[in-house]
Image: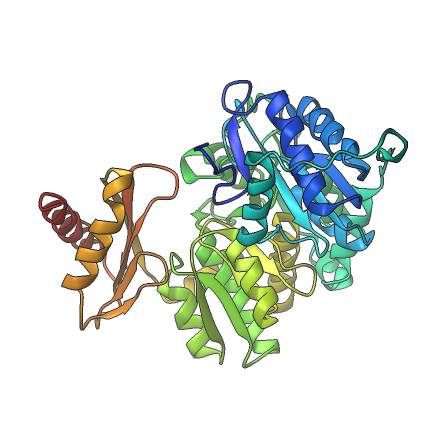
Length: 455
């Protein structure tokens, strides 16, 4: 965390007791408490070993500024976000590092609608923190702490209102859930059982060291899930990340699908029922998302990369659906935030509605091959590199919302953007053939390196 900067793309993150310490967490609590000002705030955490420690530290800071804290304990991030809205809280704080390895933890601030505070509001909190503008309460006006143990149950009940329970139950789906030894295991199995599914659980025990697999649901971490789906003859497999706001799916053949493919399945069915709707998605999403919108009367609203940006844009334009290629689906009728369990229920609802297996629903989509790459680039040269690149790309079909995304006539595309977390430029290429996707990465790697030599 640099001077005058606490928040990254998604909250405050750091290695426990190195970059993120209890005394720092107390001060973050004081800054957030000062920002909200003697309000009612909900607080909860994921399964990390440091979750209880940081929860107590942040609660100390919040109550010292006169905020009343409603402690929800361990819960998925979307369950806590729903509770903030459902209980008409003024805001909330979530202790989570999402998909990061177990040695990390983090702190997110939530607004009264359950959506993470905007980047502008994060800047206000940072200003209070770094300029020491903390407003302590008088000893007689300290905040109180009480428990709110019903959050997970309320969240499960809320999701059931958005799907056809009887239709899903009639199919008797068998679903394998890989909860990553974290909070997804507290709610998703209950939800799916209530929907009449048979459940096989992997990594279901809560263990903040994440012994089963790392909490990032990437294909290389999901071999056990894919093999289990095939071995038990399940209809579907789902893997959650550490705080259960993202879900990656495995079809009945054991094939792992990246998030844009399953998001496109949700998008198509949503647009069939809600034509002319806006679909909010970052520029890092596959052209597949635009193809589906074009085919089924939807309008794409592109955003910068980052779930907070997608949520805020959905709020701004009153959109009911958003999604990311990493497995985040934002279903507005429930809440405009990423929600892994809600996405799972929607996929099951679509399978029940159409009578189709997930493999077929995905095979029907336009197919793209995706390649990724990166070029090392010092932070102080990122803007110069981007400026020179944009000069060279003049006249092309390009979007400059976040870096540069170029679309070509053969339906291929490449996104080149400075990384928000490391000294590098990231590249995402897609095309109708693997060869073309690889060629784009090679071509633009050479182009970026050539520009770098001149600055």
